[in-house]
Image 1 (cartoon, rainbow, N blue to C red):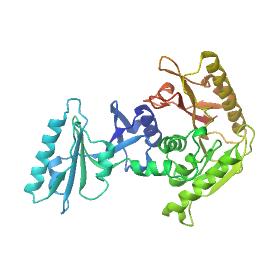
Image 2 (tube, rainbow, N blue to C red):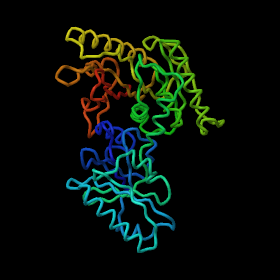
Image 3 (cartoon, one colour):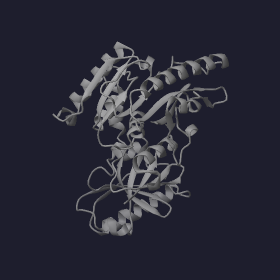
Image 4 (cartoon, rainbow, N blue to C red):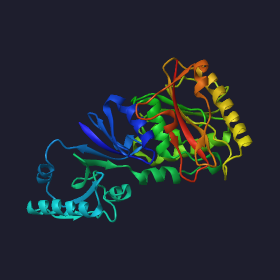
Length: 376
């Protein structure tokens, strides 16, 4: 089956995630924010970087609409085609509504407003693709897809903001990005233990547990270990599937990632290393060089220590710092040239280069550069 994916705010990162989960041969980018994935099945809950997904129809849309189950229908349309506009999209929605009415159906249309596409918030609020007869038609050129869901922004926000222990000073990794790191590290493996050696408040650990992995968190700060434990206890208490006897295992301990011995050996590593102190403005050149050197030293020492303990083929997905420059670009940590002597290879993607894997908000001084490595 072929699925149409609407990519998130950082589409290159979204594409890398899709390649990791489905292989590059099964992923085709068809627009800056759209991709097609060939797969037996697809769950949007697994994807941190894609905001909508739809099953591409290989037969006329009219046939699909004519054979919908009985009951009231909620219908929305998103047209991502180059020449799409709100007026034409609404006219199309009215056409499909009239078709359904001729088949005796009661139809409520979800308005597009001033856009040819529904926002992910509108699609999610109306449960399009999530409930029977709540339908979103997603169009792009010759492709027509029926939504199978929209990114659950409500659940992400709750896991981010309702956790009992948060600390803005150490940075707050977005759950979406944590999920992307996990997928880049595991490439969709269904089980195993994920290590976060800089676990902080436990965002990677919580997202790993929700995906069914056992979790192993270490941090230099005992306070952060306490925070991770509180947040995981809260998550397990609130999540029914994590309350079963076969729920993922949790292991937490204080440890310096440059020296610690992890037992048992983890299967995958997903983490955000220390990003440094929060900054309110781009650092001066001298300060930047010091920040880069400190981050490189920490990263190198960690990789060297870890490399002694994990077998060949173990995969890591790491978020490391990059700093905004006065011209709006970002300058990161030059670690690629050091990887060979550290004993790692960098994973390459078809649709995303190393420089593309940069995650940041427009006003953010310290961005997150993603690197994906494999132990030689």
